Image 1 (tube, rainbow, N blue to C red):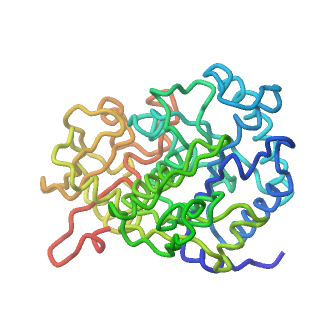
Image 2: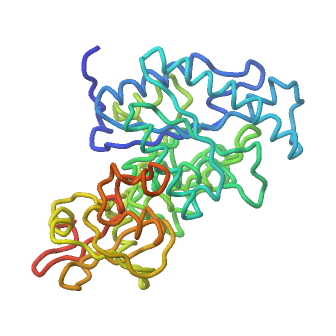
Image 3: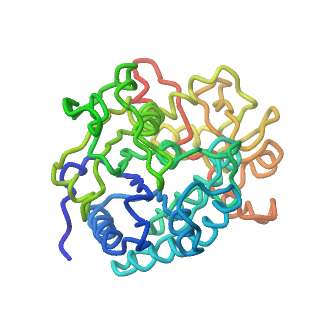
Length: 385
């Protein structure tokens, strides 16, 4: 197969594709196998063009309720959870089978709200997904509806997709919907509704345009898509809303098809670094040797070997100060170990971590994407990174 061109998507390295239930599952016939195969063809084309691809897919409950013979209408909580349990197996198998035809391995990730909101679980989820991408797999992500209740759920996969996009420093979030973008008013009820091709900022006026367009198979509507847009764009991820009703829906976007584009504020990595740098308080400090300071200035991660001393008490995922040999803070970062573990492995090679801690752990004390250096005299923030 020749290298593919990703057209209008060529400027985005890491892409999340969110798929709604109504696109993937038919009330009477179940899984729309032909549509899913066309989507897999699109994913393969993106991969061939050099993109990382993540899929956030609804459909487990919609598919499972049919498999279990549940009648149309609102499901009880326990029926929804049972449907999710049955449907998730079938959904995962379908993704595996269609992607495997292109030689692509799928990896299932089931998340609850706490997995992206609680520090330690956030880091674990991000590391797992990042490893799947590095190994060439496509993560298939869904909310863990078998255990989630109203108090601990995202509420819809639009918001889940936006949180995944910012967590994984994605450049673009594609929301495939049963509507081809944002209109000035709900087009089904207003024939004069005007199509909005570009949104530079989500203002109250944009929010007022959203209306509501949920269906029986989908909890979300345009309101949740705008909320997802607020999360994504604030985190540096651009977003596009496009119709998923046709075959090869992503190819249609690549070719310049009708869609609404939402501009990001900055890029996702820079947004996270700005958040790290802007924290008023740190929970401890890592004191570095000259070699580590030089390595960080060239864009490298901080390894345990470059840490001379650990001060303060902190937990994994806390913001800590990076202090050079002159006692000057040169940056801040999200540390991958708690203070006791960091103390035990400081000065060691990454290959020696397991012998000391009893588990392999991360090779980096702070990954470069979780590290914000202070600009030197004459530098701006971008140059410091």
